[in-house]
View (cartoon, rainbow, N blue to C red):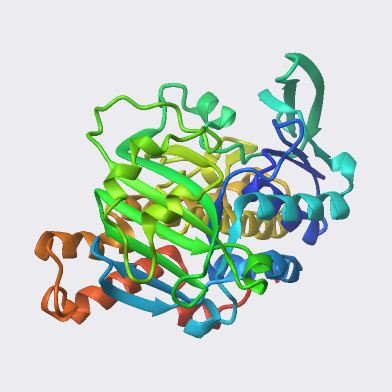
Length: 418
């Protein structure tokens, strides 16, 4: 029994570790020849941290990540709209971690190589196609650096965890076209600076058409009394504007967005100073894809961003890929490496993630910021005069239920893979 996994990102490596956990052999094929700790920060919500903890990775995460203590929303004048505790401070049994994406990737990669063996995690292998043989799958690869064809691989199932530009998804849905852009551009970077607010706060300021997000991601810096602040500056344009293909590693230009944030100097954070002090800046259009009505075709299925790419709203993309991986492993253990296992996995995860994709298109829990902008663009004296408590609390609670991290429900249920 061998499962082939196309893609060695967060979802693919979590799937490999989860299959190893249940005693199922697998092989990972990653397009990149030499994975590097690239990108910027991400958040892992408590339901995802729980699953990684069950894989024995909590200590490794805690060595580098910041356990997020609160999430706070502000208007463009720096006035607090609403805040809530997060992770352990909110009563979850597991923390919410803010971590550098590259650090998380390397933690998963190192664990996969140690547990599966280095011969089971192959880099420089880009999937070009596959055949369903009736009793298994035969997958074909090339080295994209040289365009040389590599030896094929045979397995019982093929799991496509190859990202938003998935080769498998493109083959299954050749008419789908490029990802859908909503008109927003994100400029992302990291800056070493003084801590702000609690030192473990995640903040969002502004509104739907101009926003600034910031949170610390380095425990090492925190232990030294400083912060490595992961920040996102967002502006929304007309959706029919021209845009470039999304790539987390495209260099951004401060002149394209910094002038619009020069007045955002709050008594608790100097936004333009944080932006200007960054060592690098990346540009990324906010894109997703329409939910599909089918992920599984025989012995092949989609997972992670290949299955449900979503706007980076609500800190959910990576967390949902981790949940995918654990549900997939559970169903393979239950039914074996057969199409029925893939269909059972899809039956649970496709509707759930489709709801999140659509909720994120509706601005997710960040909609409270847009309501404040619409009702009080010049600021407020009391936020209660602008938003009702039901609007504030209901928006957050509803999104948690949709995304699967309602505190009481999560704390009460057992692990996905026991």
